[in-house]
Length: 196
Image (tube, rainbow, N blue to C red; front, side, top):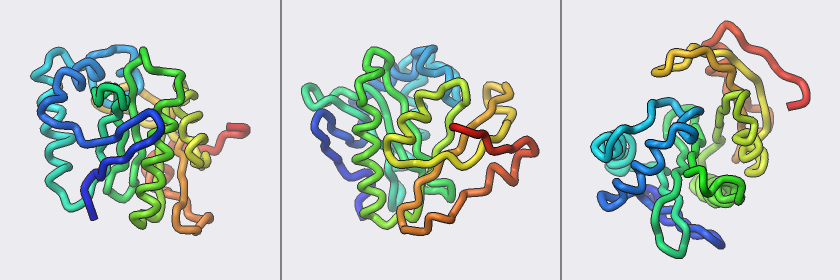
C-alpha cells in the first residue's frame, strides 16, 4: 500500500509535502487566524515550518502507511493547505487552509477524495473533532459524510485553554453502531448536544 498516494480532483492535486514547500508551509502555519483552532502556536519563521515538516511530514513518509497531504491547486501545484488521516486508533481526519481560500469548498473537495482513498484502502472508520466555536469545520465533516457523536471538554495543549470539542465519525466498513469512545471515557465533562 502506497504512503500518501497522489489524489486528483476537479480543482486540486493532493500530494506529499516536499523540501521545496517550506515557504508554502510557513504561509499556512504563521497565520494567527488559521491557527486559532489548531493545536500549536503560529510559526515565527521558515525554520519553524521546516521543523514542523520534519516532525509531522518527513517522519510520516518514512512509515509503511500514511495519509499526510498538501492541498494544491492544479494551476500551480503550490500548497495552500493540508489534509490528513492519522494512522493511530483515532484515525483522526484533520485539515487547514490559508484564509484567502476559505468558503470555496476546497477542503470538502479534498476531504471527499481522501475519504474515498481510505475507504478503498480498508480503513474501518475515521473520526474528527472541532471546537464548538468553529462550526464551519463541523460543516466540512458533515459534507464528507461524518456524523456527530458527542462533545467533551478538554484542557487543550499546548495552548492550555479549556475547549469543548465535538466528535464526528464516519464508519467505512458498514458497522454503523461503532462509536469511538476514547475521549468520552478520558474526559469527565462529556455530553451529547441536541440539534448539532
